[in-house]
Image 1 (cartoon, rainbow, N blue to C red):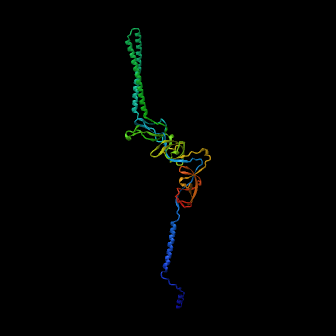
Image 2 (cartoon, rainbow, N blue to C red):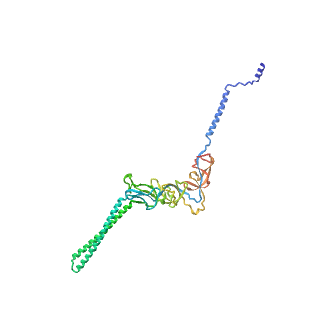
Image 3 (cartoon, rainbow, N blue to C red):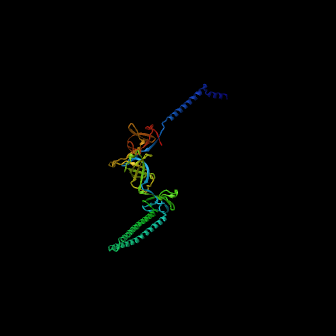
Length: 406
């Protein structure tokens, strides 16, 4: 048993005793290495090249032969012929023959007012006229009798059987009856004028359409009072219906007075209704109203449609683009023009360039610019339709820089 124990003891390896404090230095060195590595990694992470967030847009092209725009504006569709139809007299409405959206023709009866009083006045005037007319035959008969008597007196005076005084008396009777007859005829004219006046008043109780168009509102109902002027507070209407002549529709836009020199009569215009954003309506400038709005510093421009459409309605919002007139001589040779926003082009030292996106980086590309098309620039060389460029690039954006698109 003791021999086995001695043999096992002989197999044990004796280690050199550790010096005091040795394990602590090893631990410190390892810790310093770990801390240093972490610090270097943090410094590299904080100083890495971070991608720049940018906004991009696609390069577009204007079709060959298409006019370039010189100015954009917004306005409304208006009607040159628009009227709120009212009565010429104050009265009670007894009949309304119009509804919203109804097409009316010129002279069509829209409403009627109570005419009982006017009809009574008209009947009285006609009776007075008839009475005056009946006096005329009596005066004419008496005048003829007086003339006969006067002729007899003159004959008797020639024979010496009548005195001049009697002749003068018969002459005076003739003159008196002639004056009475003339007065009766004048009274007939007065009575006829009175009848015409009452007839006009009767006609005024019938309200007719002043022109052909479409009724866009119905402002009175049977039983209400209407008046050509505001009276009676809120109980009296001042209109029966509002009518719009759809053939007189046009566009009115306010153009900043700083750009009014770009607008001239007959200039082509492309109009787009807010309700139909994909529908371009050809139009042209009618005229520029020769006055400016002092408060808004704008000038009113009237624009006419080449052709009207039922979809165009009064008071619709519309955006218009004033176009540059095409050169007919070079229209056949015109080429498609590449367009980019003005803010995408950077000009330095007389040279222009843009930043074209390439996946997550950008490429700096020199371009040759041309004229303007509204808020865009024509690019004659350096870009093609379909490229994406950075809009309003920042000063620290350089070629090869990583980007993130907004």
